[in-house]
Image (cartoon, rainbow, N blue to C red; front, side):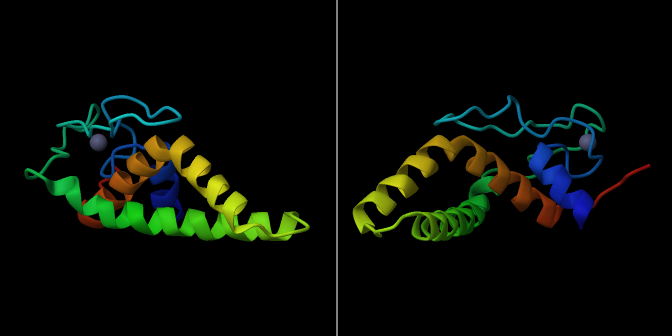
Length: 120
Ligand SMILES: [Zn+2]
């Protein structure tokens, strides 16, 4: 379980945990994230069918809601007077900055549901 979380965070292949999962590393702010056709290390086919990673939108939604709740909690605990407008602006700003990472991590989480590790 911990290895899977580390693997997702590092954006490595869900099968061998060594090869790259994405075609390029995500950067802050918006960038289109593409999954490699095959792992660079074990040659596992990472795109197993067309539109396979559309399901990662559900994971991205859950990550976004979790980040929104976390941001609201931090803002609420650090500010002396809670303003819904400023809290909303913080949430939007953080989601825009971390957009590429949320997209990449959601695809890695989605892939970890379907690929079985092969660590030898
Ligand atoms: Zn691999």
